[in-house]
Length: 117
Image (cartoon, rainbow, N blue to C red):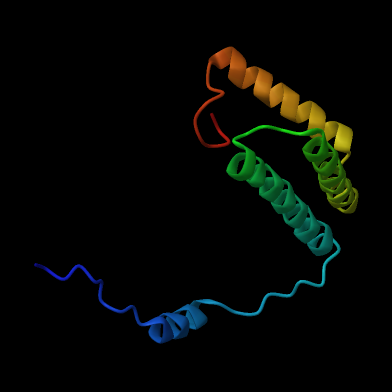
């Protein structure tokens, strides 16, 4: 019988190689906090949805709706803050998104990947 154990990966060598391609990046900018908050809260939404499927086979309870409403409110708050700090109107984000999606639907390319479809 053949041994299918993979060779040990040298994580120390990897870490040294990775360090040669990285460098400290200044993060003292007003968009950093809302961006990190946005992805954190979106992750919390995803975690709650994951548990709905893992624990209850996709059955959404009133408690799930309540918890997701609160988390989605946090997502909205961080999105709003990020837009504010970038001087982008939230209304413009929403309107441009609907226009983009309507165009994709009209061309039959809602499915797929990439921004330029």
